[in-house]
Image (cartoon, rainbow, N blue to C red; front, side, top):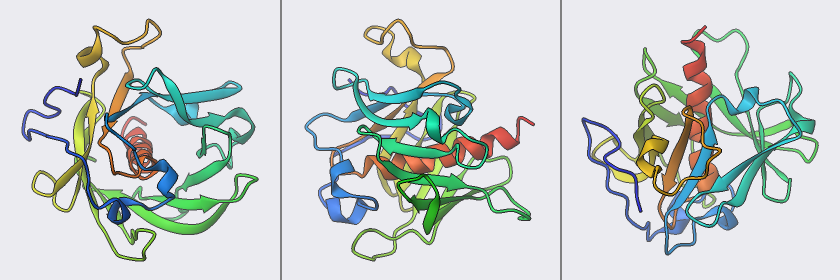
Length: 221
């Protein structure tokens, strides 16, 4: 079961990505294997979570834990660290000091949860209705660009390889209402689903969505 139309403006149809190397940025083990789309169950403001561990599950695969945000990394300095299912840090998101906009920077991360190599940046237009990556390269060293049109206010949107609405759709953001017939009872109205087709690096998509969400919070201040 897939998301319903994710935006009123742009119909989004997800299909398997055949060129997996093109959309692998972190590691091939995070590429969605198929045959089903991955559906990551996320809570709004995940980095404000206070607890031992927040687990990000695939709602389309028996709620298997795919990623997690561990309590030991929820300090003021390193609270935006995402780990894999085994607790190994994958990436950290930072916001440069003294910048005039709210761009987020995605880094590789040390085992201790500290930022290392900068991988790419995520920026947005005024109002944060359109998002884009900067300096993004896949594991082959080839430059790629992702563009998003996401809004967590209505829990709708999408991410494309190339121009938004015209390039290859690689993810959807959906309201949990779409899945009311089979979602678990612990779903909150502020939760949302990120749907990712086979052949796409799920860690890459998660990093862009969480960077967008952090930028969105600046408009709520």
